[in-house]
Length: 70
Image (tube, rainbow, N blue to C red; front, side, top):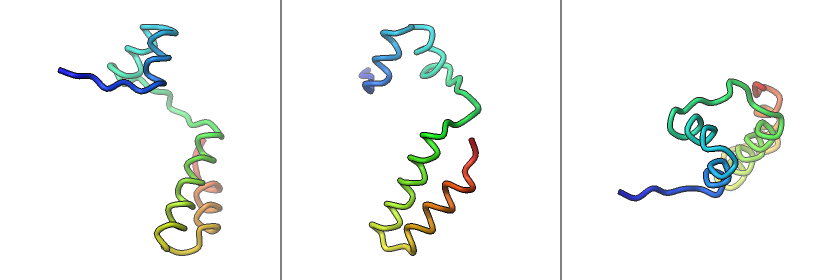
C-alpha cells in the first residue's frame, strides 16, 4: 500500500501528529473559511471562466467573491 503525502500534510505531521490525525484521518475540519481562501476560490473561478471562454471573468470573480461565505 502506498500513501501520497502533500507538503502541507508532511508539515502538519511534523508540527503535531494529533493535528495530522484529526485533519487527514478523522476528517475533522473547521466549519469556517478564511478571507484568503475566499479570494483564491473567486480568482480560480474567474480564471477558469477566462480560459474556457465561459462568459465574463470579471463578473464571475465579483459574484464569487461577493456571495462567498466566510
